[in-house]
Length: 359
Image (cartoon, rainbow, N blue to C red; front, side):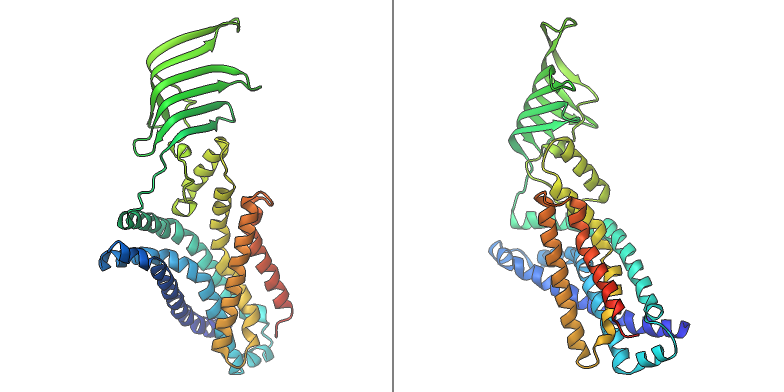
């Protein structure tokens, strides 16, 4: 069996490398031509454009890896079938499941590697590419905004600010309301401005109002500076726009989702993207099983048929993911369901195809 395993691996890995380079090149061209007009209008130097494209390579590898795995696996098995080598293997009593086991092992290793590669390489590269693109195209994206309202601490603290400055991480014209469990007002804090320091907000030129011990009269107090541990809502929550989860590490994305939920802001889109980070990493393993089930079905025009089937299945997968993602963001299904449904559908399809595959 070791000889058969080596034969399959040696036939698969070179095709995987070549197809990965091919699909990454296609994605690079799509990314380049999508922005070429803006580059020309802004007279961006060619060296800067090359730098942006190089920073897109890690993300391109992640996007191209599933379809490259599917294409390489189906082509490798189709070559063996067209040369009648699969017939000899099956006639020797080797089952299809045992023969394609090396492909499944490689798919599992690629899935684990993709998750770590995205965390360690692709996300930092995306952050650098976004910053460089904004600088070259003079986009000037900012998360500052006026009339900001945030609900946090399990709906027990309400922040209102006339203006949030994302650059300095400060609030101007701040009003904070502390509420009881039943929604009653416990304290009101008015401050000219607040500054984020380490792990909490520090309010300056403060006027606070709270009930006395009898609960009948309001007591007013003034202070130049005030802070408390419970005022720890992260500055990112006050940003007007939702940050792109794809440009965050997993820990940052998880904290971002938690802060959005605490603040009572829309979080389904961010939570769906967070779950998709894990489901998409599992795609190489799923397509390794899928190509094992369909690889022995082509005996003629194997290159064309393998490429055609791979592209069709890739389009079907991404369209399914787009539809379920929109359903999750709109609240029709849970975010975890929207993120994992495409994977589950392809797993079921793979099992059905295995049931009717040649053995």
